[in-house]
Length: 315
Picture 1: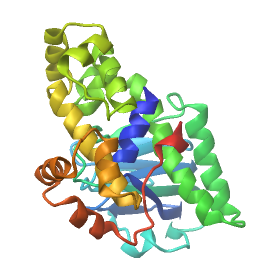
Picture 2: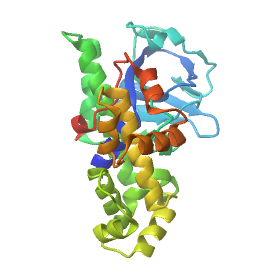
Picture 3: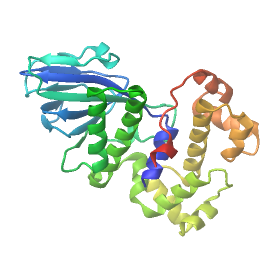
Picture 4: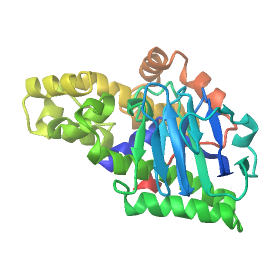
């Protein structure tokens, strides 16, 4: 199950980075408005209150982790109802902590932010609910340990601290999804993540992800999943809202997009690896899906060193 989530996080180009580091004491409040990133806040010391419009204020304690989607303004504070000014956007790229309130410091919060390639149609981040709150009772040893390591690295920076932190930020997202998946209510089972709840669809998706270059048909995929073609099509439509053939095409083209972003492999090799017999057929399908040719898509990422999460490193 988690391997599939890792696959999709990698293919959708998810990238994470350390954001603001908040150190606060006394009465304090700050408003976070980020229209470009998914925000994750980890309380590494003390307590805080999270307020999101339309939701009750949530008390956060040491070890709590919350994830909010792109474009959801929210307030972090020492108590509900305090007047909050905007968090200085420079805090998201500055190496020093942002100090709020008055000494002494009682609360420390690390903010992480994540982006993804929105042209990828197979998404995890966009399938998540408006708020995920993992408290100490729901946390896993992996998530709690990763958050502690981040706090330690920030408090005691050593050689290659940036590389270590970047890796820990990526792992934090995986650990949070791992902790959340078994506890999510039925109302939050939406989009691609529905595949994880249906054993028939899950088997079929495993086969597609493991061998995308095979000449899959509805018949062969149904046989691999050990069900009839009608059952396979019905369950795909009910869970992820796509026909099996449509999901196969979507996954192949998202895989190809990732290789175009992150490798210098020839287009012909990429086309063959994702099940297309000719470059023209692949180019036509890719252009329909992504709105531009493979060559133009690749040129937009040329020179970029941010390649996103590596699925193999997350297993």
